[in-house]
Length: 299
Image 1 (tube, rainbow, N blue to C red):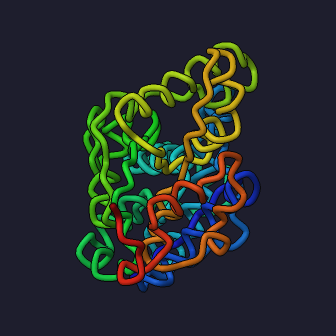
Image 2: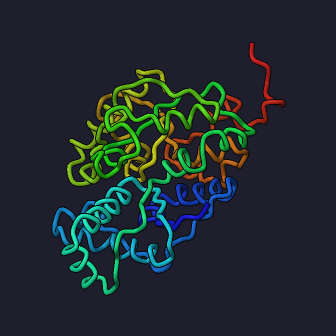
């Protein structure tokens, strides 16, 4: 199984561990990720707030490079996935838009390929059965809140791989890895995105509500597929909780990191040692890092 891989800017900077763990688990599962050569920024939140045509042309260039290779595109970042899908649909629906974008980017793009979220590729492409067969260190006893955020499954016309109100793709993945996905109501709430930088007071409240709801639902950690959600929930967690007179210490994981742990890779190789909220004490307390045959007996 071969996909063009569009990592996006975050995975080269604040989300290096996402990039690292995604490549490790993909290779382990026989999923070839061909990184698009000379890929460029998709514009993410900035472009479509300023110039609609620019917001389509930027991702279209990357899609055109993948189309020339005859490949569908796997995208780990929720925001990038959303923007690439928007460009794909705009070109598919309008010959005039196709011609305009082709002139801007200096190459033809016909939208014959398809953009897919990496989470979708893993769960519905590679398949839960194959992933489950490769698990050597199941996430037994680990209670997780699966957090999709607002861009991975919305708008449904573009994302089109899960329920926009109650998505379950990540929940099913967690179950295949041996963990327990808790039921909670904030799985698609917005974390504030970049608002947390411009209006830290508003952003902090939004971040805290998500963290608090996850903890109230019984979660011991949150798992996400979005670099910006990760940044807000992990890096800003202490500030957001302190503003409410609380202290949560709730680890945040990328789904690929948990896949890597369950497949037997060391935390350092997956980038887990770079998190602001150290997730290792939780994994050690749950004995997840040991092989099941050598796990400590529980009272």
